[in-house]
Length: 90
Image (spheres, helix red, strand yellow):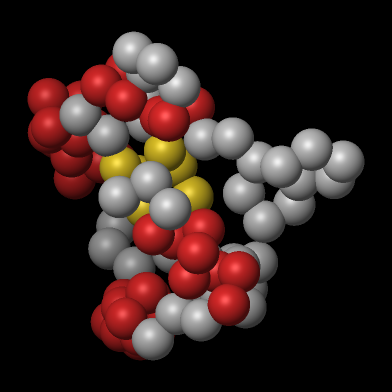
């Protein structure tokens, strides 16, 4: 979202009929300068997210509490291009 080269970024979810069929997967490494924290997120239709949560809970471990708190701070106190990108589709 933050690297768009010659054309402005267009989120798939904003296209006609795509909101309910789009999963947005992102992380905090580049946009929030949190490299090394290995923290990300996914947004999408509730049914898909529930199914993903079942798989995720059995296949991965939890991010550290420090990474979780840093992610909350990044979203809560977002500014500039990261703030615009993080809230553009919601």
